Image (tube, rainbow, N blue to C red; front, side, top):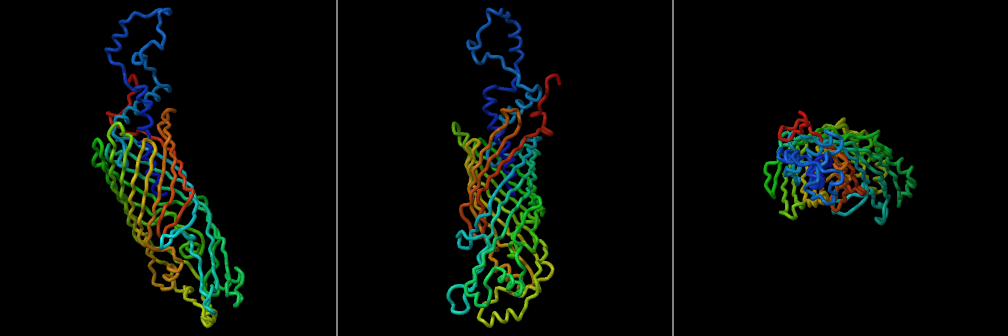
Length: 468
């Protein structure tokens, strides 16, 4: 969700151009009659009622152009249709024309499904904890499946403004609504020989080994803020069929950070961070190739982008004291208890650095329908602490590591300009195809709505009502 609003806002200005093209080419709205036209019209002798020519007998070019509805507002819409139609706005490198703003809002839903592991296989979101049988080395001592499930949705908002025809500033953020729960499944194996038969028995063992019972459910109340991104985008070249742009900006640490006592990273609950939650820098470059006429509605685009984050100080989770005699007893029975290190020395805080990432996107635009494939590569997040037990805890859960993921997106847009609304509705579908150490979401749908607003347009674009 972090970037979908900026992409949506850009698509708004593109679809305004594409959507209004049909209406404008049919009506030629916004063109005034020349003085010569007016003069020749005044010299004609008016026809009597019986001499009037049937409309179907009049050549189309001679039919009197009717004013659009809604007075000056309708004329203004038609005027800006003509302005946008005359500008070369196509491809990912497009920028907002000077003095115009685009404001967009969107809603997205997604369902946490699985996770790509280190070997690019799809597995459970949190790995099943499996302890080998210490008695005869066959089977398992016990298995514990966290059973993570739930759904997520979110709201995004963004604004883009054309500082010049080739330089656009943008600001976007989002809010996540999470409903995630844990439905643990405990399978005892030979642990029943020690009386660890039920889930309640297992929780009792965990507490004696210095582990709290996991929190079983997390619900956003009412929503969790995500990262906020400011970008400046410069369309540094735009020819007839090729265009390029570069962009750079700052990521603000506004994202909600999971409560350490129920953070999924520590295996203590189902709560997730809703973004990086740390200061970051972001940059990218893009190039577009528009096909020559008559296939000039086809555009092929490529984009590369990346981000780097600074370290952030965060609170450590607190663990109950370890009952050493219990651990010693289990060890005397040949049970590997190294998966339960002593965590009473974790301190008050640790330093977290979100993973840097790089992503490449290839897109195909067919008018108002867009298809794209994006593959992102993420580094390894850093969890820095003086406690060896804390480091072992993070490693044992298995959710931290170098990762990458690929996804296909298909989007379409419905312009609202036929209704004299300078905006659109946007629909987007996303499907994860492959990855490593990456969460997999299903049922990823985005619905957006936006509007274009002339704020401080230069005289060359400005609408001037009649009589002014």
